[in-house]
Image (cartoon, rainbow, N blue to C red; front, side, top):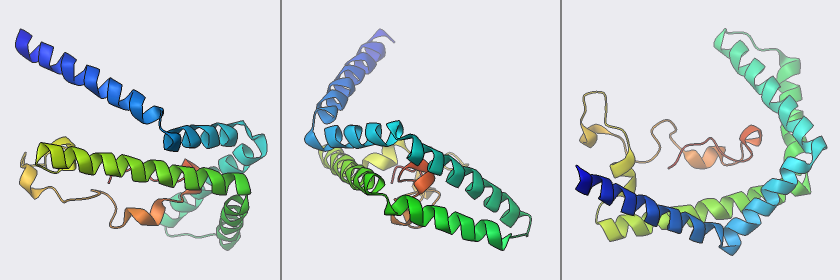
Length: 160
């Protein structure tokens, strides 16, 4: 048992060093700078809050089979307004570059391990079998379609 603990400690230490190395890259520094600027801009934060609140309301209403055209139009207008902001565009570009770097890292890990890294970290299917787990994103058919979710600053949170 102590050997396993030592192994876990070593892996965690190396993972921490890898994370620090990634944080120091120009790509991640740019992402952190743009993220910070976005977080500090009260006007953008107000727009994002309004957008997210209205999006949740519209989604809830859609589940109940009702759609308020005014809410849908306002939601679209807010999205266009957010996407039109240069600061948001800069953040989104920095986010996409950080995601691309993380994907390159995932591919390198897969190559070094000799197995797809995602397959190792994906929870097993309900029957406990990893072989039935779908590859890629488990909840979205095309994750590139939500790289611009305004409410989350650029992504749905999936790791594919």
